[in-house]
Image 1 (cartoon, one colour):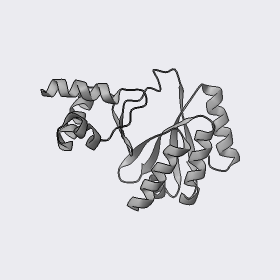
Image 2: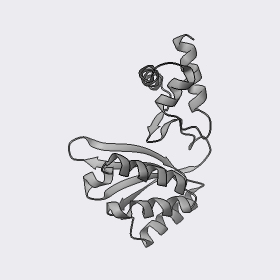
Image 3: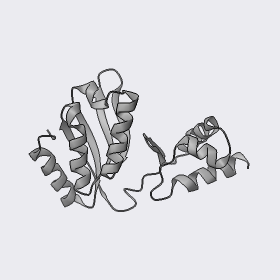
Image 4: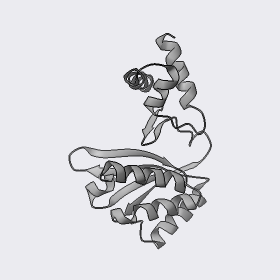
Length: 170
């Protein structure tokens, strides 16, 4: 398979609606090295494809195409409250697209999450524990933004209200 055909195949795989596939899984599927996949993803991004890497794999977001409302909410809490905050959002039927922190040296840092369920959150938090990694919000004393995908603006407002009532939102 030539490079152009391979990149088309990568796009086909990661553009599936529920696709989340790691570079290692793509490499195995296409019978090539992980490094080639990483390079191909970089080239596809440079060509303008909206490919994001989450802790669970690559994906092409479909939020805007699906007509969902995308909003940001400012939050603050301790690391111990992370799971509760995330569960609250997904339990209300919203998707946590990312987390954004304002770092004093690097400026805005975004971590792509794409968390849609308690199972997603459990897998994410297990990875945090296993790898002994600090959460991005710990860099900013708990202050962070979440980009959230909701059915519409009213749904987003309900999520924000619940976050405020539970003392997660600023």
